[in-house]
Length: 334
Image 1 (cartoon, rainbow, N blue to C red):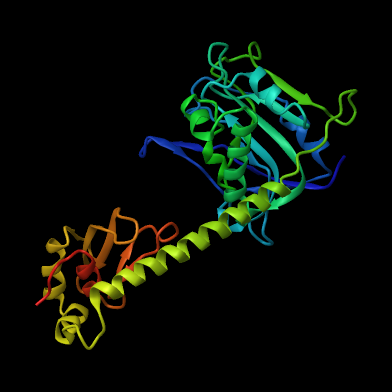
Image 2: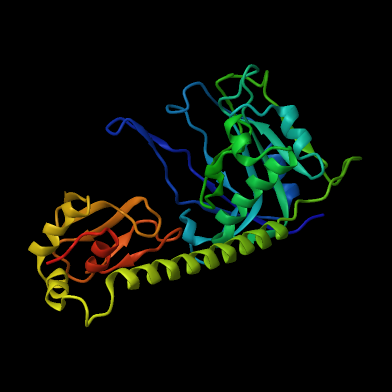
């Protein structure tokens, strides 16, 4: 099968002597392809870059389509992802990867640090339909779980064994080096395979990730339901501990809203650690009433935000007034 595709290409990063690291230029050029049959051969050719990657790095590419008028590879500007890219660096062999993705068409090529003793490789699979960039992180998370399931392992076990693909590929703005001779310095020992091409006797279908998108949506909906129940339960416990406004000391509440000295005095009682930035002082690392992690913080002299908040906005989302936090910690106020 075929359909039009778009990819991006980027210049090779440049070594910075002052910073002692490679600096990447994320501004790229869009390549409008007739289809996978144009992209696949590009992924089969090993360029001459070899030796020290920091001093002789190859250019980069990504299988994405940018939003209209955008050229910089940042996640928010990725409109569509056209291929699934799986990087295996932890112990998966070429034979393992080929067996795992055998039902679908793909290109497999060894990567820069590949050696005969330690296989490192990349598998690129064309997608029947491009996936939305703003959902790619969740989709790729589902793919990792599904990939482990198909190998008969839990994802955690696959990760521990070094058989899970690189999780960094869940970033839709991730850029990939083009195939290069790398540490081997020659084609000897490298592999590039186009499996199941349309013009071969062993044609294979393209990968469909529609089910992964549905799984991601179901997982997100379930997480939102759990979060709502969790927040409702924390709110109920807060009401039980704090009571009504008529019962509580209104002057104490006013001071904890407005008086920086009162807010600062409460921090150590809650087990918080003082942190002084250039513009504000905060108390951090307070145990969260919602998730029990040391992730609650508040500003001592607030301009706008007077409440305390948990850092884990997605998984927990707790926030409340300081007198509520004190009550939930069993700290008496006077």
